[in-house]
Image (cartoon, rainbow, N blue to C red):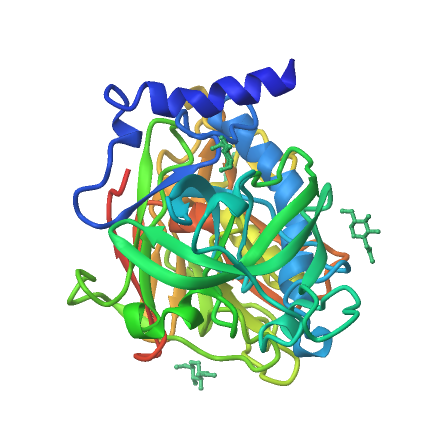
Length: 427
Ligand SMILES: *[C@@H]1O[C@H](CO)[C@@H](O)[C@H](O)[C@H]1NC(C)=O
Ligand SMILES: *[C@@H]1O[C@H](CO)[C@@H](O)[C@H](O)[C@H]1NC(C)=O
Ligand SMILES: *[C@@H]1O[C@H](CO)[C@@H](O)[C@H](O)[C@H]1NC(C)=O
Ligand SMILES: *[C@@H]1O[C@H](CO)[C@@H](O)[C@H](O)[C@H]1NC(C)=O
């Protein structure tokens, strides 16, 4: 039954292609990004309201995601291995692989370096080439034992806490929007135990490590990309991914992009403080400090759902928010959110809750209300959409996550060493 369901959902975007706005082909060269719960998504995981889905996704995704981000340290070098808990998918894009091209929905992951793809038909592609153990990229993937240098480079990887797969390192021609990328290296999935969060057709890795899409396409995309993440509050929207320096916003406010050798795949920025309303919150010293030795600091990540701060900093920010909202009936917790309050007008609540501002070096990111609060669809209730990093993750890492980035163009310019943010209604 569940299988049939998935199958029908997979067919739906194709059969409705002419009617369906979110599957219409891009005419600009941008790659359409779908939220996994978008009505066009082949991975749709629930038919609940955006609020309930956000609660579920935050609970299911974020603790594993933060463990994953924390685990990406040079002391545990492998970019893919049986030991790793990897994240779960939130955004999907269309790509195709091989000759003739086979169309796939891939999860986008800006923190991963190892792409993997799954089709039943690699062998029918005339450009498909499995790689031997002697290939230079093989050692990055923690291969299963190789009987000889010429034997195939294979590896096992776990994913999202509920899935695992076996793959053979391989190359084939990747097609993204109008671009052709010959000899793209990825894991060709040979078998998988797939849980609900597993991106069944694959994942495109946009981290900055040596095996990622960016590192493989420096002459084409020059390590520059931008994305606009669609709103979480409707399933009818899509966003975009734009690869390469062309057509990027010419003037965009930006903050320095930092490289942290302790976690070389991630995009670090310099968060200096956080304001709630007009109050600059006093957080313990070094809450946000960048440290190349420990990996501490703040990363921009599209695979985490809500922004996380180290616990003591989060508590200070939340307390200031509560002080200003001054909710008559107090606060309740729902899932990961510990600051939910009634917005019923007869509760005498301040009509506009205070804005949250992230002060980045050279750039103040004032979060619009839709990016700092989540509203229940069932009752007059709003929650502050921020949280502490899970207690069991000693990551010392703060994460600016996708809910806070929605409807913004986020530009990552590695050679220019900057991350730009601009409000954009991408949906
Ligand atoms: C996969 O490739 C094989 C061999 O070329 C072909 O017989 C089969 O129809 C293909 N299957 C799909 C789903 O395209
Ligand atoms: C790798 O995964 C396959 C199943 O996909 C399993 O049979 C094999 O034992 C695994 N190998 C290791 C070393 O974990
Ligand atoms: C909070 O609300 C109470 C009444 O419910 C009021 O007495 C108090 O002055 C308010 N505090 C602030 C800081 O607005
Ligand atoms: C972060 O920004 C602050 C304030 O501009 C600056 O003093 C500090 O040196 C910056 N840290 C890094 C690692 O760039």
